[in-house]
Image (cartoon, rainbow, N blue to C red; front, side, top):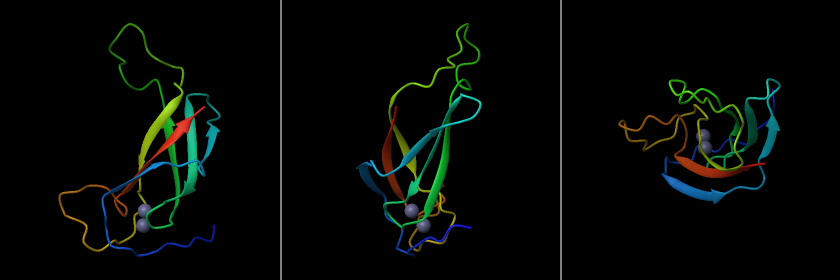
Length: 102
Ligand SMILES: [Zn+2]
Ligand SMILES: [Zn+2]
């Protein structure tokens, strides 16, 4: 279990822009990337997978190649952040940011 410096900040919808401190690794099955880093809003350790080939499966051409470029991530630290509006389904502090895939 990694030590992390989670901060119980109040929920705030905020776009932190492009983050370059996140580590992007190719998944072993080659169908996407794992993105690991620290939430710019609350400091939680975040790991999310960006996978491909799951969308547009009804079409004749299924995209299997990860496309380069920025992806938006939303904090899902699963911790309690006060002031989170009940109609929001995010499971974090409200921070979102972009990570550029290679
Ligand atoms: Zn958090
Ligand atoms: Zn967060």
